Image 1 (tube, rainbow, N blue to C red):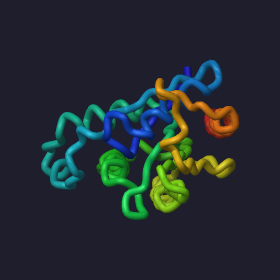
Image 2 (image 1 turned 180 degrees about the vertical axis):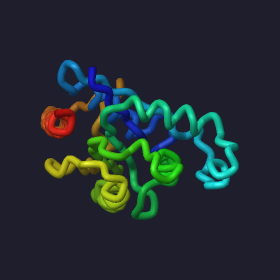
Image 3 (image 1 turned 90 degrees about the vertical axis):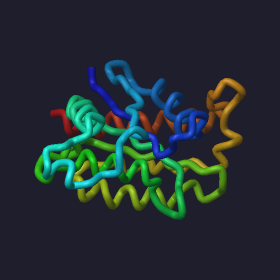
Length: 184
């Protein structure tokens, strides 16, 4: 079973990112299991924790969990034209201590979403910059920018537009193709 971690850029319990994650997780091919990994409990990264051998238990748990993961799907809103702090913090925690990054070589994909028309384009591209540095091969096409996300879901949190479901399925398939390339 190939394990895909889903990291959310929003901590809100009814976040659009979380709803999208539930919908996309169901679109992966057989043999691919997606799981949302909690990142809201991670203290802000401080190198002193590693240097002084005083690493918070949440760091250790997160790092160990990510070592077991085969690929990572990031689903995020945009905060002030960039990546939400919780997501950037998770990247920092996982990339340390130096030389022990849990991200190295793991295939990744990004879905950005926004209630507005811009679809969190800025967050998507800022996140790509970090992932390139972390040596995470990325799905290049199709790019996934989901605008007007508030109107996307029915009362049960399911995507109600068939065209969007079809697009998200093509995105999930492209991600699976990327994962397969890096598993062989």
